[in-house]
Length: 313
Image (cartoon, rainbow, N blue to C red; front, side, top):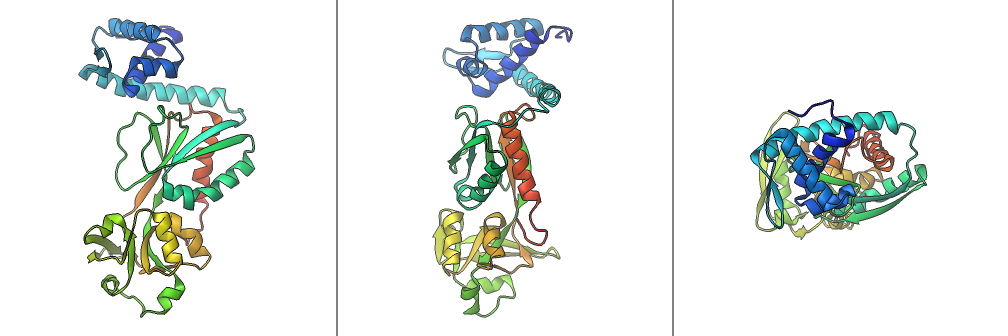
């Protein structure tokens, strides 16, 4: 058992180095992130294994992988390190001014439809922070790409990443159309009325007939097998098609909201709802993150929380 009275610069940093090696997969990558030599990190790992009396890593010439005992130790150690780092950050950085360069990655849809206004407002409040936006639907690794914060939306659980994920908001999905287009068709009253309308759907729904599930306030569920007139690879393009009068389309409420508020789009079958997703902010660490990262994450959360109560995000 590790003696808790050991110095902060000894076993504690050895544990941190071990967790970094597990996260990045190689001693060399961990050494670069930690600003140490490969030999120094190797000595830390050997010292930690001697203290614990167990092999934590299985080593090969090209990589290292945690043993069963190493995986279990890393999971618990990471939790402890995070709590310690957050406590230290609260005490040490309460008056640090946010400044520097901030690298943020987000899906293309969010980056083109929603982030521009948010980024402008953020930089008005924090002019000392410059920003770099990496818009891609690929889940970039934060450490490997030197990314400070990732915004990701998912309908399920996030995969294990070794990073800190904070849930920002629930992202609803809805059916929308332009008022002019709707005016040329009879009003919709039930989900099955969609079969007789021109539909614009993501490619996931256009590659063959796919089911679309809607639920009303009473819990009644309708599953429709739809044949869309247009299939689109991204929500940003789908949004523009709806504004042009292409038909009824499926959009995240977060993307549709500005056009809804301006009267350019109308919610169709507003009493029926589709499965929701969650928007997460992912960082290398929690309160240990630089002030620029914490400020941006807090700004995103406040921006979402300040939405009008009668308008879905």
